[in-house]
Length: 476
Image (cartoon, rainbow, N blue to C red; front, side, top):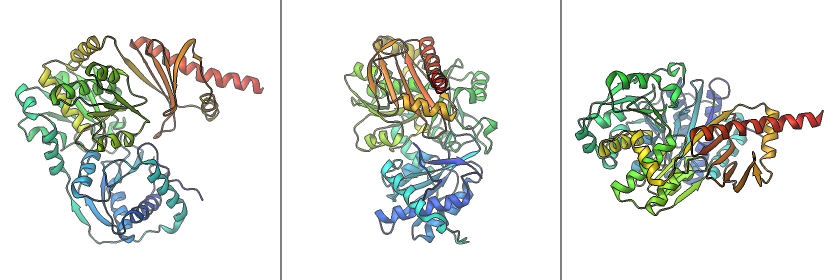
C-alpha cells in the first residue's frame, strides 16, 4: 500500500487542499505518534506552526491526534520560528516536535517537519519508518474532534535569551548601525527584532504582519522577493538589510548599497569571522551544493571542511557532536557550534550585523578582502529547471554514466554524494541533482567569475535538453 506522505530533504510538503489536507495530516501525525511511541512508550512532542493559511488549524488537529495516540502535547501559543522550536526541544528535553511549515515554498504549499529529541530534522531512517507506518494506517487515522485544551507554551523568551549567549549584541549597539529587518510576513517577526530591542538596538521593521499570500511572491528570501527591503535600506540610509523566510530558518542579506548578497558568500564570511573572533579553529561543514569558498577559508586558517548531502540534518549531526564551528547550505541555512542542529536564519542575520559592526566594513567590502586573502574569487550560481517528465527521466539515466570530460572540459573528479558533481582543473564545477522539496532539477555551478559560472550553467542546461532531443531523434 502506498501513501501520499513522502518526506523530502526537509519534511513533507504539498499543495493545500490537494495533497496537504486534514485527512492526510491526521494520517501523517498518527504515523509520527506510532514512531514516537516505538522509541519511548510515553513520549511528549511539541507542536508548532508558522503563519501560513490554516497552519494553526493543522496544528490543533495534530495535537488531537497525538493525544488520541497517548502522546503528550505541548502546543505553541502562536506562530514560532523553526529554530526556536528546535531550541525548545532541547531545553524541555521532549521527544521531538511536529512543526507545520512549508518554509520558503510558495503560499499554496504547507508542510510538516518532524524533529527528534536531539532537535535535528528527522534522519532518513526515521522518515522512512514514518512513511511506512502511514501507508499501513491508511484510512484508520480517522478524526475524533475534541474541545479539550492543551498545554500551551511560548518558546520566544528562552530562545531570545539563548541568542544573547551566542551574539555579541554590545558590539552591534556600540556601532549604532541603522538596520532594516524584513520578516517577509513570516514568523521571525517578534523574534529577531525583539532580540535587538532587548539590547538597546532599534531596527526598522517591515512586513511583520501576517499575510498568508506573502505579497503574492512567497516567503523565500531570494533577491527577487526582497525589493521592499532594498527600498527600505535606501529610504533609511541603512548599513544592512536582514531578512528571514516563512519559518525563519533561512536568511537573506542586502548590503548598504542595495546589493543582494548570495548565501554562499555569507557562509564563508561568517566562518572566517567566527574563527577570528571566537577562536574556534575547527572544521566547517557544507552541503555538496555549497560554494568551495568555505574550503578556501578553511585552508587559510589551517582547518578542513566536511562535505554532506543536501539536507541540514546531515550538518545537524556534526553540530550535535561539536565537530564544527559552523555548518551551512547554499540555500541560506546556517547554524554554529553550541547551538541547535537546525537552520537558524535569525542567528545568521544577527551574526552578520555583529560582523559588520566589528569590522566596520560593508559585506561587499569584506567579501572583496576575503577574495584577496584566499587568492581567487568564487561565484556560485543555482539554476532551477522544470523539466518535462521525459527529459528528466533521460537526464537521470545519463547522470549514471562516467564522465572523463564534460562540455569540452576534462573532468578532474566525480562526486556522487548527492546527484552528480563534476569538478574541473581550474577549480570550477557543476552539480546536477533532483530537488528534495520541489518538482524540479537543480543545476549548481561555480567558477572564478560570475560570467563564467553563468556560462557553465547555460551550457549544462543545453546539454540536458540536447541529450534528450538526440534520444528522441534516435527513437524516431
